Image (cartoon, rainbow, N blue to C red; front, side):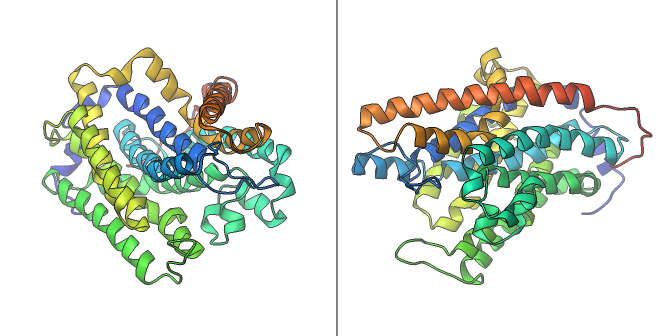
Length: 389
């Protein structure tokens, strides 16, 4: 990163644009969370609750296998979207001169209350019977994704592993922001390319240097999957890509690519992920399309163009998307167990709809009763302000 006299002003080149809210990105958040739900509801993996029936409610083998294949990369895409979006939004909304401590306080209050509630509920309804005690504290403190042991990083409320990554992003953001601010406008695309190249190198290391390999039952070893998908430091490439892309839009260097073309490009990336070897579907196949979709939606909001993503319903769905995402583990796993295994296709569709509504309802309760009240009451305090960026 090269500091120049013009780069610091690059972030201030479009003050009007930077002040614009980005409701289309809020709407996109729910679509990403929905992709993760579609993955969870169709995955052909044994439930952790005895008698360990398949998590998918679809009993017809052909239908179940087709849905598992088609939505098999949806979870990866949704998670990657969230990581890129996180870097983009935090950079877009960064306050000049804000100290690190108030920033960290807001981010901790954003994720921990919902996490603690879902952690406790998941333990109460089923996880305490199947979780080793050594996983409890790392999971509660959101460091469990740093452990390669499957029984730790996949423990208790499984979707919470992504919060370990977000917590790392938040911790490093004040330092990363200083560096990203110093990138000259003319070099932004170069740095975006370097982040994608980092993802490629990461997956090459996963495939060829991390012990394990393809077997009759799995394309990757547990260690390869952890390093290639779960290990938080390796997800920083997506986060920093989002930060750089925010600067691209701020600097007016995003080309005139609209939301629809970017969405079509994302569909092409998803198709590539379906047919590519597993490691390339984690991030590489879809990172560029997802980045394009985020930039296109943000630019539409800045320019005041129409967007179906920023209607009242989509904004509400986006607001509750964090709770909707986080409670999927307990609702889909425990709810699926309550509804007793697999069914014929019409019944399975009905079961999936019931679990969707239940997940959305629990997610809304988390937002309205936990997340929003705590953020409103505690996220701001009078502190000495020391510059972080």
